[in-house]
Image (cartoon, rainbow, N blue to C red; front, side, top):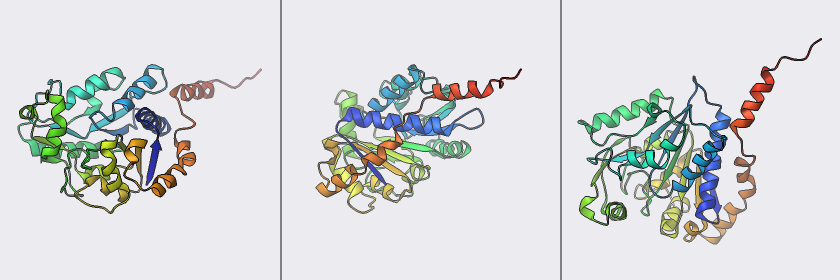
Length: 289
């Protein structure tokens, strides 16, 4: 498990975006080999998405051969509602990059048979070859996606009733009116995310500090579902200084001492421009008389 500690939210967002960029480019995706990326919604990943959009617009990164699977969606909220996760992803990320719409996968919270929709989502992930990198965020109570406290740590994609803490936290997106906040959602399970070959979890802000403490310094506990990723062979937690406020000083010092090594994951920072240059040079015929 890696814990990446940066000073501020913007630095944590940039580190995460650089890591995603390097992973995609090093994977060398193409028509026969897509990179599969799990994605979250919410305010935490916005800075990361902005950097990824910047990389695309600068010509350093392409999503042409990337398939995405989002973590969750509200039940009963119209797809074009401004607070639906369909709208969130298209407005904040997808419409700004070169990803093909058919390669984006978001659960349908208005499906006639919600459980069948969840089962089909699991099958789509399998058909895509599994998730290469699942990026996630957490709530103050340590839930990942909508796997609220008490969720099974081997759960799969399913219908979930939202906890009151989550409804209260999301009310700010619905004019502060609790009655407007959906009470149910479709969500990938903890087990679904655990199946990914790698997991990166973004945790920023002092209000997430106790959840990070539970994820890092205490044991695996279904009341703090993010703690399950202690047992994943390749987990990267990316956080800012504020999120470490509940950690022991020696824990923070230990992981900060590893930053010289961990920063090699994003430095050098790769670009598809270099890949294209390599291809053009290799395709040139050698000189001959």
